[in-house]
Length: 184
View 1 (cartoon, rainbow, N blue to C red):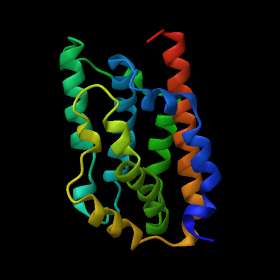
View 2 (cartoon, rainbow, N blue to C red; view 1 turned 90 degrees about the vertical axis):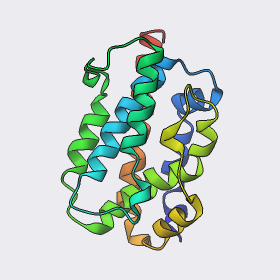
View 3 (cartoon, one colour; view 1 turned 60 degrees about the vertical axis):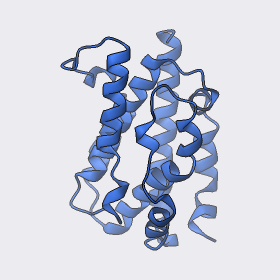
């Protein structure tokens, strides 16, 4: 079985979350999307600040996510000095802590597989549906970047990749709950 097949159920679980539907609907509010970006920025910053290197520097997302955050802050008339850390979910904080403890390149690449390859592929559809310019989902030379990731993959990464999908699923659950509670 391939890594994709070995993680298919967890991938489907993430995609079937209500918040994933909101992202794809084109009806996500600016405030909810800002909250999502703040959480994604924390996750990607954690990955990009480990002792391991991405297969290609062009994959880095943190700076692009900050561009999107700043664009939304302007639209929402928020101060650039506003601390948005209160928007972080429990699962994001747990994920950041988890990533900081990654001790093998194989495990690191499993995170790259789930997060970055997902953005290279599915993110292109999301970019058309969210508020703002969607810098987060803009990649230079996406086909070669995907090849760079695929060249590092092996089936032994399945268990770690499943954990990454589970973190993503939990974030979607928490994001949806906050969105409903705050009527965003």
